[in-house]
Amino acid sequence: MAHGWWRHGVVYEIYTRSFADADGDGVGDLAGVTAHLDYLAWLGVDAVWLTPFYRSPMADFGYDVADHTDVDPLFGTLADFDRLVTAAHDRGIRVVVDYVPNHTSDRHPWFQESRASRDNPRRDWYVWRPPRRDGSRPNNWLSLFGGPAWELDERTGEYYLHTFLREQPDLNWRNPAVRAAMFDVARFWLDRGVDGFRVDVAGAVMKDPELRDNPASRRPGRGMFGRDWEAQEHVHDFAHPDVYGVWRDFRALVDEYDRRDGQSRVVIGEVPSHDLAVWAGYYGENLDGMHLPFGFHLLRYDWASGRVAEIVRAVEAALPAGAVSNWVLGNHDQPRIASWAGPERARVAMMLLLTLRGAPTLYYGDELGMTDVRIPPERARDPWDANEPGQGRDPARTPMPWTAEPNGGFTRPGVEPWLPLGEPGRGIDVEAQRQDPRSMLALTRTLLSLRRETPALTDGTFEPMPSPSGGVFAFQRVAGEACLAIALNLGGDTVALALPGPGRVVVSTCLDRDERLTTGWLELRPYEGAIVRFA
Image (cartoon, rainbow, N blue to C red; front, side, top):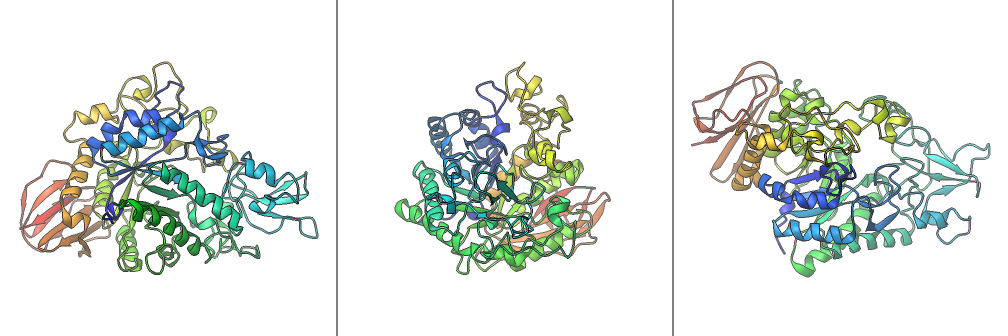
């Protein structure tokens, strides 16, 4: 069987609506992705992850699926998808697609049947419950998008569960027919040549079978979601222990395809839990679960406080033997790294992402240092923001700027893009940065190339180094005789770091001191990172 490329491969997330618009309607599409595969090959990523492009009413921009096995006309056709996969594979790029198992659209034929009557054969495909004796909702569970997680269906007099929007009813994964149908969805895309799945909200598919109330939070307001959601401990609606068995079975399905053709496919699971024991459980007791639980470990912390080093060490300690971590600094649900950590840290953050042990996921545009874009109220699109002001994800989903021209080369001039782009002319576009040998894009490409060519960065061990302050994070990657030190100054002061011995700077985040010899010390400027190879 082929070596697992995913153990150290770099996955590039494409928010399909925002990458490139080929047909001129202001919304990105599959043909737009295909047209820019040469850029991704030049950049040096190993795989692309496409957010949902399936048929959908777009209440949640494709995460409300109405047909799992067809392409929404907004994004193209199945033939467009097939062309994308072929073109990507021709360039050595793998294709990972979003798999949305927890819920469907309320317009999905399954749900239309389910809500038709209480005795419909598909009634139990979703989570239905009658009101309590006092007429209230079945329990106290909340929707992550605000308000209760139960919606009364007047036709049948029962409530259905929706962990997200009311237009996204939850499937009942305790029904074997649901599991079989959703596994068939995976087979459909595997048969079309995909190289794996990113599983949306992987922990939500198995709820407490007794639907018990969630207890009040011990630390309200501590997390990254809405205030109401954070008021509870989500012990009964997320990460029930039975969930691990679901993903072991799913992994077995994917492994069967690997055995057939000797290829290597990946299962990446969105697991936003900061409980590392829960997170580690998704690997499976014998590493027979998910290949890569998608961790949010480093998001939204104060990077000058020393927390980054603490978190990385804790993740390394919790990692099962033989497993690899998945690192992410941003995605379509989170503010961009250059906004929440500060634009001055964008370069050092990229160096961190691409030098940690494990498999990184790179969010489109972060290679340019894109920041969140202010969205005028009249242009806001995210339903979460409409329900809970301040939780909107639009600012991190804006179109990719390919050039400095109007609409940034994302769509045709004169067409209004689905979300506004950032201010043009600031050098945050592909065309400008490809011409600048010291641009953020140049740094990202250099780091990706170094990563591919350097076994210490792909397969080496992780060994923390002493640091002079909480704002400095330093570690070594070691493979046999080869040893690299990665020194990252996350703060605003110049610092001096002791090294194990003399070496040579392989690359710095400023791209202005490469190949410089060092003695036993390395001076780092504010927000600078450097990789040193020891002689």
